[in-house]
Length: 440
Picture 1 (spheres, rainbow, N blue to C red):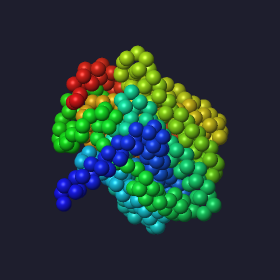
Picture 2 (cartoon, rainbow, N blue to C red):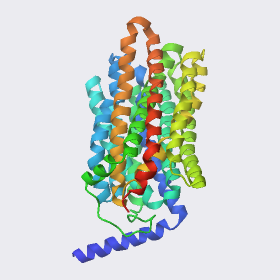
Picture 3 (spheres, rainbow, N blue to C red):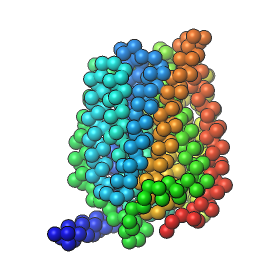
Picture 4 (cartoon, rainbow, N blue to C red):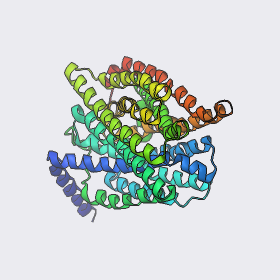
């Protein structure tokens, strides 16, 4: 019986190997995983456009809303990501992703039933439970089916889901909240993901480990081994902190930018959703793809993988004046939203290159766990603390500045990009040496 099961597994892996030799199928799988990531961020970020409506309906403070947007989701998401990644490095990644999509979609729909802060907090934590199983196994699959010289581009295409989901979340959430209510918005954006889960389960072949490197399969590494490798790599420590601070800024700003436009510029929610959704979605997708493509191109041209960190560093610094223009100088809400386009481009250029370098620092059956470790730091600091810190700062400044407190809170957050850029620079100093020490 055991022999029959082993033979069946070997046959399935052989079928998968043949399937992935076709560029069309490889790109189809990348596309389907990207759609899943669109739903991931749609369900995660739709709360932002609904923020003012939720605050008004449930009587919340900015700090409480920051908790809903951040720590309610991020604490569970970041913590569960690591054991699920260990599962992904040993199990069938396609099945894990399908299960995760079904869970986070159902929990998003249930958010529409919440009657108070704590009920909504728990529902958002449930979304985090599902989404913890999304990205690490997807990153691992992508790194198995695309070679190293195309990997940053492929991971950046996958990361387009961040901004595709944000675009749909802003536009659909703004319309649904205006035409119906914030509760209806949660239900409508959540339920379609259940169908997507079935498509992933039955249309994606589980690829053999090490397919892109033409290496034989290896046993999954213990989590302590993966953590030990990354902990001793100075470049990774700085990459992780750079990504975390980058996310601290972008999540803090994205959580409260719709509220800024509503309070400071008195824009209606459907207008915010449409304009800001298009600006953030299109700009972010251009930046995310551009970051991966540009870093791969420059690294291949110059034979220098440190370009995968120089690109995030340069873009992080370049974003600062454009953020400040939108928050301080733009005279109308429409102008502030439209000029957010450039910050959206440069803010998205870090993730694909940083993921690619993280995967290059570890072995074949370590990639999902390496992603989870990076995302643990990124999400706990960035997603977990960023929105909450912005809300706390806004509440602290409110007695003196009133509704303008949100402006000064966002301006303060922008300057964290300087701290972020320092870590990227420090990562470039030891990256070459650390890559040379990576496991075979």
